[in-house]
Amino acid sequence: MSLVTLTIDGRQVQVPPGTTILAAAKQAGVKIPTLCYLEELNVIGACRLCLVQVEGARALVAACVTRAAEGMVVHTNTPAVRHARRLNLELIMSNHPQECLTCLRNTSCELQQLAAELGVGEIRLQGEMSPYEVDDSSPSIIRDPRKCVLCRRCVAVCEKVQGVSAIAVQERGFDTVVAPAFLAPLGEVNCVNCGQCSLVCPTAAIHERDETDKVWAALADPEKHVVVQTAPAVRVSIGEMFGLEPGSIVTGKLVAALRRLGFDKVFDTDFSADLTIVEEGNELIHRLQNGGRLPLITSCSPGWIKFIEHFYPNLLPNLSTCKSPQQMFGALAKTYYAQKEGIDPARIFVVSIMPCTAKKYEAGRPEMNASGYRDVDVVLTTRELGRMLKQAGIDFDSLPEEDYDAPLGISTGAGVIFGATGGVMEAALRTAYELVTGATLVSLDFVEVRGLEGVKEASVNLAGTELKVAVAHGLGNARKILDAVVNREREYHFIEIMCCPGGCIGGGGQPAPVDNEIRARRIAAIYQVDRQMPLRKSHENPAVQALYREFLGEPLGHKSHELLHTHYTPRERF
Image 1 (cartoon, rainbow, N blue to C red):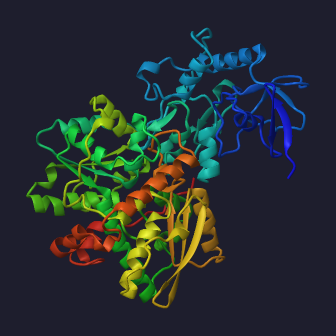
Image 2 (cartoon, rainbow, N blue to C red):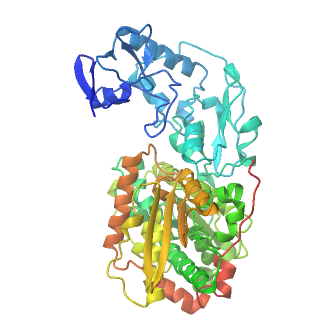
Image 3 (cartoon, rainbow, N blue to C red):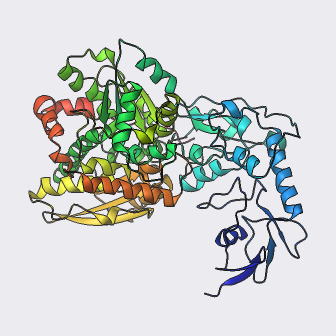
């Protein structure tokens, strides 16, 4: 393939045909400012901050949508370019609330950073403010159109990555707004609460519902016994809130930090992930041996669950009836743990630290109260926990390594890998293979289901039965698998679907920004933790084994179904 040669700021650059000026400049070590651009999505050049001068062109052009051409000469730092960029930024800021000191994104706002980089030291232009009010109808996501810069990143990720299209550009002219159709409240449409929109929003126009005040209040209440569970993906991402590199493994520091906040017990969602595998693995075997509905599809990703309820309700019987690990934990905390410790379950307050905004929605579902109480009282995202730790003045990086509390803090490597796409499948295969064959696996690594490829397929021999499996992450990829199943183009026995790109490590509540390089580093850390665990198979977790002996009886038994399983609800698509 012949390369295109162009000149950027006096330097010759060679790039493949179709490369944008923005990408070519990056290759040349030249940074061009952007506000609407997302590397992994097609963009429309909405913000006009990446303007450059191309010799021979009649006007400045947007670098993010202009393709490099042979012999092109580009200037990125002329007086005209600097003036145009600053003026466009000032126009964007002219109707933006001046609330930086109190804004949730203060110090992490891209608009704020660009103002500093482009030397905008005063607000010269004062425009009319947005007429739209804050939309707080969703249990997971808050929309604040006043702070929207109309970059359309959220629209692109909702439509092109997730295939949901819950939001779009509405109205025209100054009344243009990003909102659901007919300006309906977000909580009343087919939004799946995944929060990918909040992850790419450059300002605080879309953000998670902050519930830290509820947790502070519970921690200060002497009548409450406050316990916390941490999701697998949080241990490889919370460090980013304190300047550590993506993929830094900070499990012990995380536990220490939570104790210093005042939690009575610090537990691990990996424990209930192991439990999920035991239940779900037995459910798969039962369906295989008794002619049950196949393929069995995993049910631990709440954004995915709401997606299938809206878009593929006819496939609901294919879902595993298992609750997610978060909800299994909550049910057990207010039954098994309460009984074991002699604590009135009415006093137990369960907090989850999750990489996921959809977990907030899941915790409030009416089905999630099998214990007689709401199973999980409050869900905090990784970002919310980071803010709490900063409020408490905790120097995260200097904390010692501490261990989770028993018994709900004992886990295996199989529980850890739930945080990465393919991890649930791999954990399930480790257990299902040994339960069916009675043989010990020679290698625990099912590498065929790992990685950031959108759809992965594999087959495993279970005592003479070829088990066909598939993995998808991101709801756009889920559509591909589900359509193939519906149209009988593919035959699977077991499917893992994770709502967010990369799985939970790329959840909507994780530190931003996130791209595939960051996702890959977090995933690598997840598997490093797995390799370092003394136990790597869920059914070998001694705390899970004790749970069945002392309380549940057997997998898929009456008590298990009562506490650990649930049902789903068909929902209207529009």
